[in-house]
Image (cartoon, rainbow, N blue to C red; front, side, top):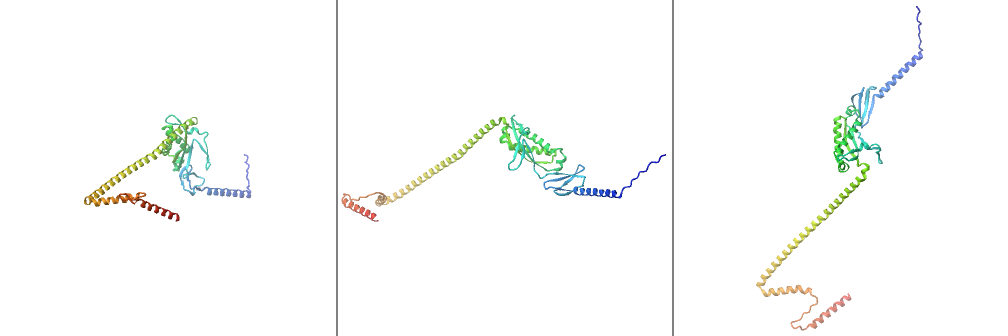
Length: 334
């Protein structure tokens, strides 16, 4: 029977040393990688969701945290950041000079109103993540689900109203109702989000009927303007007229009271005078005559006093003329 050949290799010592060094290097690299992968940092506006073999094991707060290397995975969820979804347009650049793009998104914003008219409604849903576990594990794709639910809620709300309500006076009510519906559906589906605000950015009729609709709006605005002007004139004129009427009434009442008081005073004075006249008729008549003359004479101009026969008029006139000349010359000298 043939004997099998015996093959044996002698490994050089240098090769064994190199292999040992390689093993040490690999072990060292693995150790360094494990050390680096054991720690992770969570930002202030985030929460770190730790998953071990894909299963939820806990949450990490902001700061430096530890996890099992090569086994645990961390999903960062921005719980403090306000997120938003836009419908009917997209923001291409934000800032002071923001720009938007509407092309290609008309299907989101074009919807049927309750009176069978079309409206082009653009809106924004602003929300925050308040339950990271539900956000990651309860619903497969929360963002797409929220978008579908938002569009359904808006179409439902707009479908219950007329086009004039949606485009004019009912915009705030529409946004408020959509916010309530969205929050209720989010809680029902356990999406882990909190709806903060629904804002109607713009609501217009479709482009083909926009000129006619704008004409109707301008007519309504002009009507409201005229009504407001009429009310302003009414509020300005009526109170003034009422005030003037009240003033006239008060003046008349005051005049009547004055006349009554004056008449009563004159009656009282006459009665007192009559009582004195009865006591001394001659003295009373003379006193009345003198008082009357004292009141009348100062109001008269040039006066000539004569006796009963009219004598001595010329000397009196001469004296008055000389007195007038002297007063005139004195005034000129002064």
